Image (cartoon, rainbow, N blue to C red; front, top):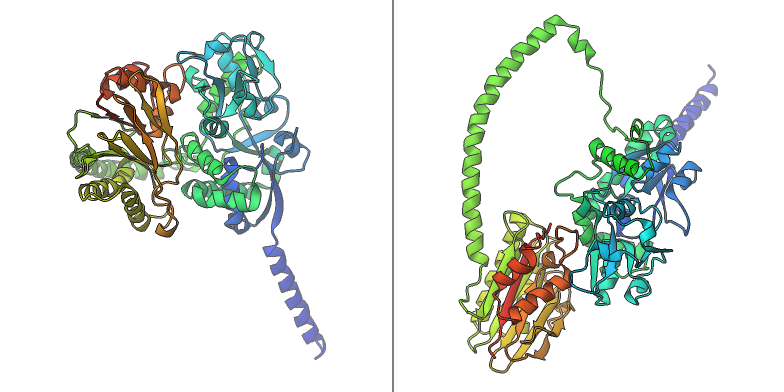
Length: 595
């Protein structure tokens, strides 16, 4: 080789190396087609994109917002997107010959419900007969629910869905299909009395948003599909753990169609649908899918023996271990090992049993301590407290104190989360409230100090929704600070609502001291009236018929209190007698005024 050829060859090798390196880091472009406009409903995908999870997986992902009349399945089938977000009607697409495959389930429970204007406190699903109802496309579970209740579509006046809550608010229709995470925000803001009917009340439990692709994508690009799925689920885990951050991201980069508070409301309602504390995000059960297929079969939309083969993605295909069974020697060795391990496990189980027993005793002790810490310390016949925790420990806390000048102070707090972690977070709030009230500190100053303590001491993402009330029995005046809690209700002796105080502040612990608003609302109180405070778990509870307890239930309790019932009796008659169940902690606190 000549002295000129060697440098030339070296240059060629270096160029080839740089070209290979550039090709290695080039990202694959793919598109994810959403089923609706940008919202917290798709928070996990935004998090995966903006936090670089997709980039780490070698992907450049375009997240496409749905257009009017667009269909995610059609977008994927026609090659404009590689992945899509659909609902359980993907089964019908599969039956129609479209080779769609579900990669992961995001919502363990579908958010679709029917919302109806409330005309009377005892109305039920059968009151929709003959009424004007707006049903959106692919509302198969709602159709199945109505049919199971004996309400065929020919028994309602079905109308084209406008997707505008004002049609229900203004009374242009009597009921609409809705997402429990979305439309109630605007209905509550409009102070509309309404009832919510969920198919789950009839045992129809469909999956919600499902990530899907085509079988051809899995066969031709198995690594890309696996990487996209893993990055997306990683994004969902982050989004549900950091809802405030993702809400800010949506407003900043994706959509200003709704206010930031709407996206946070959506995030809170989605927790019950995803159940991230109980079920791994993305998990899907073949038995649940078979149940959904059977429901479709009952509607005549699928054959009774419809096969799910190829419809459900398996991220970890089973390996072939038949070679284990072909070796007699290995089998004998395995038997010996299993016997030895069984003896060891038996020993471990005995120690574990003792440890579990000790843990249960410690848990009972902790529960008793927590109950003593957060129960009312003011023995006053005018006050009543009733609560039902979702788990062993409640994230709700109530407190009552009498100030040195004879005013009654009330606190009802709801910490983010459930169980022991949430309960521990509300203990300092209760202790601080009692200490400041006993010293005679003004109500606004109490709110400022509570916010400062929570903001400085609690971990990021932890905050406390709370309502703080001060009643002057002699002057018949009330002052209220409501941050993120349901309305405080006041009724006169006749049971009619005299006043309601809505949430006008953010929760305690979110804002630093220099941004915190401690302004109070002051009103007169009727003689012999009653004031009712409640956590959101009470209004969101669902009875045996699938009807939410809602504001109608709260008003019924208020009326019973005004008529002389105790809070315990009012709750027993209005909540427990209806068989209401809630996924959240339930607490109510009441104060009766002397005539």
